[in-house]
Amino acid sequence: MSTLPSRTAEATAQILVIAKEPVPGRVKTRLTPPFTPGEAATLAEAALADSLHAVLATPATQRVLALDGLPGSWLPAGFVIIPQRGERLDERLAAAFADTRRLRPEPVVLIGMDTPQVTPDLLAAACTALTGHDAVFGPAADGGFWLLGLREPDPGLLLGVPMSDPETGKHQLDRLERAGLTVHCLPELTDVDIAADAAHVAAQAPHTRFAAVLRELSR
Image 1 (tube, one colour):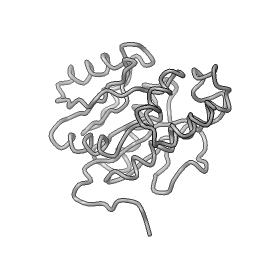
Image 2 (image 1 turned 90 degrees about the vertical axis):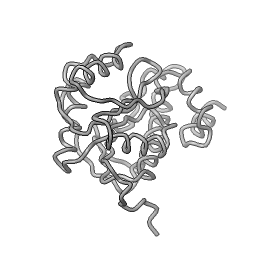
Image 3 (image 1 turned 60 degrees about the vertical axis):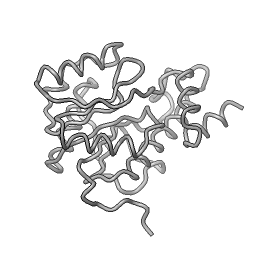
């Protein structure tokens, strides 16, 4: 029996996940030390799996994974896979929105692989918000953002926004507001970047795959 939610009237947007294949030395490098590159990749894989399963449990018109790398055993069924395009992160985000929009001309909600504590309720709230707002924005504790939803994705809303900057979220929100868009803001979440973030997120969401892996590695 399928565990995927059926497409119903509650499904108001596509959900897009942008992620890297969890390969040692390519993901979560700021977790090293105290973790080895292999352990950091294992944590990244768990965080990505948690994120993908939260998306699966959320009503959506389509679920898309924009992937840098190759899919593995961590990928559940139910996703359309597209390659990432572009060099800088702003270019890759803009391309992922554009490519997803070409697949289906519907609103798009994007998340990354850094918030394993994300829940279907938060994702559903983001999708629903796009029925009454032009954009939805989820700020991150490090000054970035963990979610961005757009009713009418436009590359110009992302291209040139400085990424991996303490004020990335502020710059992105300013870009949306200068474009005259109405924006609904979601609660702030913590991205997993360093070991302290990992401990904080695991404590917040102790039943996630991510928390279980962290407990095992911390023994």
